[in-house]
Length: 369
Ligand SMILES: *Cc1c(COP(=O)(O)O)cnc(C)c1O
Image (cartoon, rainbow, N blue to C red; front, side):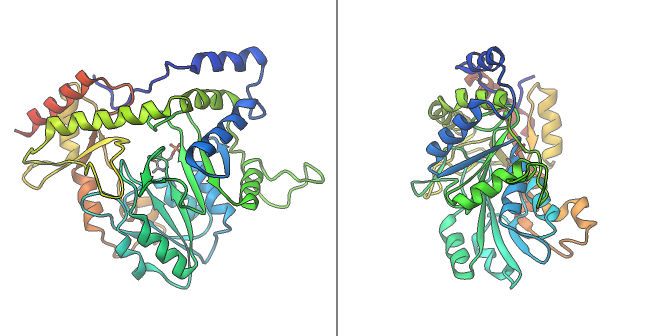
């Protein structure tokens, strides 16, 4: 079976992990955590990075640190991971969704304005798959209405929008270092910002809000969202090679594009959106209407040919857990609904070989006839 993702861990990963064991620094107190925070902040171009145990926790921290809570609304795309909505709902605030664009699968900025109310506090921008959200109109709306921007950049480490680094647009930006992201720590993530107060608030919230005067007296409830030195050791080794990783991803995307170009039954990712070139976090395709079955059937057929693939996200406004909370009554997002049912992504990890791309593309063509 060709796996949908295989990470590349053949740099200094082993050496740095051995250093953790040899020195005994395995908790979050170890030196690699600070090294990853400052190294990644320099790479993205932000003043502060707060390393956490995963990208979902990073979203919880960002929402809590901006003091978003009961009575507040946050606008976000319907086509995204549940973590985005979970962070908003757990803070006691209300998620308000917009549909995605037909071709980039990113939130459609032209749909945001009509969702803004006096209760709106923030826009949670999520860069999906390989292209960033069209940020200029989002920035203009946020400025006009005095809204925070929370930027989920988990899938777009190293991407740019009009030459500006993705992850520098949000008042708080979040990243994930899960093994299918552009760099990995196994499990891990980061919240980034330029504001020093927001950074120290995130550090407090990450670490149970221990008291400053007396450690065990707490003024607020936080979490233990700390990243360990062992995780950060992997991240430091990965960050050393991030430039090559990005090239590799674009190469993979290029191979798929060449093999699948012009296929009458497939909608391929947009390679160049003008404001950005696709970074191919994963290589997604959407089955056109002429295909008589949906993504679920395509994934099963690919599996029977030895190729592992995955669904796109399922829209937030169709999530049973959120609907049961009384959210999204009567909501429709036709593009998100369509690509959720007809979209799938193919093996496209950093360790995926050119042969595997070839076999996967062939298998896809074969199941469509
Ligand atoms: C991966 C991902 C996350 C969550 O990251 P975890 O580290 O798996 O918790 C959040 N948002 C998006 C868009 C992601 O792709």
